[in-house]
Image 1 (cartoon, rainbow, N blue to C red):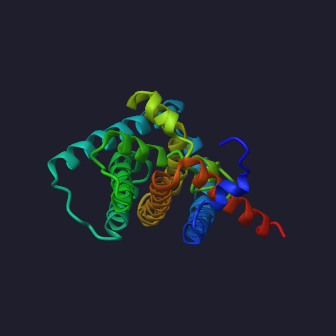
Image 2 (image 1 turned 45 degrees about the horizontal axis):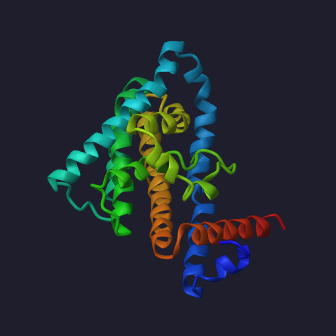
Image 3 (image 1 turned 30 degrees about the vertical axis):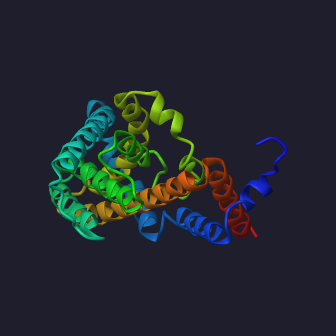
Length: 262
């Protein structure tokens, strides 16, 4: 768009769409709420227990994450194609993750690791639901790949800027340019870092059952929130063009950062 300023590009959106994007920026900015800060605190104070595990066990977490993502991706495809997935309501996936977190944390690290693929699959289903709500077909392979990218959009256990303000729309090349396994391999390290915090919070048997339930709820809520933001922006990008939506969203995020720095 030669000769067109950034301001003019953004102003091509209607006032209502600019307001919608501003709301999405606010949600992205506050996605890691107080519950996630508590998770980070509990996890950081329990990490010494994880450090005592054999290196083989610690090194296997990323491999387990790759396996869990692959299982969730393939399982989601089969569920979508069979049209057997029930409507679990607004909070259904969060409640399901609470149950698996409680069970997974009961025996400490050993049961928490076994529970990982189930929890990842529940979170992936919640992400797919967000895509469907914005008019995207969760059976479509490109949409399922976009769902995978949600796991790489930020770290819920940190208050630092983890790149989520620019990653929502900067993914088209990645989606179309690699295999599913390559995409999973690129997302897995970020998700594994998040799951390390989750495991740390679930290391104490029985008490880990309580923290596991809370951690799973917080994580599922976080990724569902990111998915709702991502697919709302994707819908707007389809309607108005990716550049104009990206510039408007980044401008809204920058404004929020400026106001917070006062």
